[in-house]
Image (cartoon, rainbow, N blue to C red; front, top):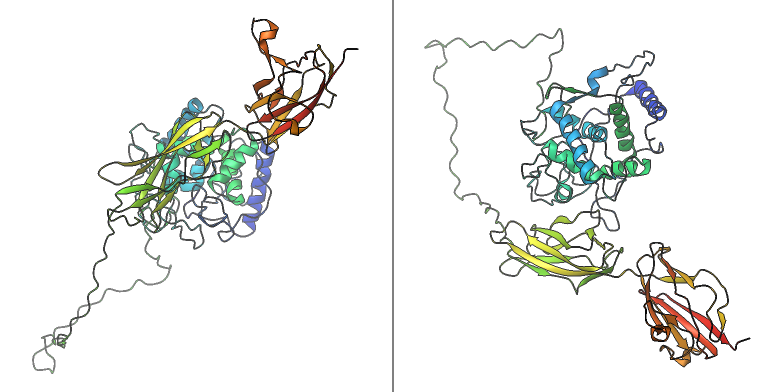
Length: 571
């Protein structure tokens, strides 16, 4: 995520010693180890949002953050003295309201997402790095900052380039986005992950309870377990794709796990804040010791009459008015608002279970004159019981239209349950609701490869039963394909020219039931792969017909296996 402009790494030789010792302390503590010591990516090396072929921006646009490390003399340590000043227990103090928000977010997520196991100390580490715990706990009684905490303008100059997505609603900037609030969410990410952590019915990125719960929800995305080191590192890097950021957060996380205590709100000095409405006010320039202060100007003596001067001021020269009035600039015109939505899809949205939809939901916002409406807000919401989500795990996203009026939702990831779904596109900011329903479907899962798991020759005497049951495995993209439907059909003849219809004699299966075996014979059967993609066919019996037959097994998705069956005369 983004962060405030705080002090950077300690300078000089002391900086190197402190950073090296802190890394050693972290490794020795048993905390999750930091990733390799490659340098953090510079802003120029990070992908710009929206660039072709690049991934979406991080939660905060990878803007700057506090890089101060916790003191080496953390709670419970007995390190020898050094020359590096440390604030000791004061550094482990967390403002009361902020600490309460971190702990309530942990408790809420433990109930709603117990697999994730997000610790409040991790939220505290990120909150420390992002905003110095909301500027040292400067909050009102509801936990909201008196003025917004804003990151730098994400205009591509030193940071990511993210055009405005919220019309300035959160960050006051209608040209580019800025990270907002104690946990520094960029507006487009807040629209997807914003939460109501204090139960007031609002999702406010400037409220520490809402922001802490949203941060925890984001860290838990993609079914992560934050007690697993790989998941923990991926979650933190999703906040800000920087190795330096990862190391800094892990240092504070380790530090707070060894002990933290509550301090009164506003009792800590607030770190330097970024420019903007949440910035700090510069102090007057200091006066150097020994430099005399400038003396106040003494008023001059009044002039005497007759001494060649006059007590009357000299009138300023007058400028004749221009003969031609200067040209006036007409006031900027505000374009007409959007009034309707048009579906740009070329058909129903569809994808097999567990796969990515090939088409992204897209609409065009138009004004009353049917011309494209730029900078319109469109909210996409998924409904249905298929488990489908937008890429990233959200079910609601808000997109701002470009100059062509087009709003395109993120890619859809089909859930594991086949069925119908609807993507509801809602035009925001209108007096009357404008909603468009885009229909979609999750189809049965598919397989692209089917193989038999043994090579035993399939030969049987007439009137008997083939030895063993035929076993196959279905895969998709090299992975097991569970829940895939398959059809097994006994075909006459050994040559495909003999046809693809089920044979009327020869080998057969028996369907379950209490009827006589003659009434349960079938040469066409439908099955489904198990959780590991395996397919075990029922026993295969033979009648009195001898010869060569084919068994054709085909799955949803077009994976096919054809096996040769031989029925011989009785011995």
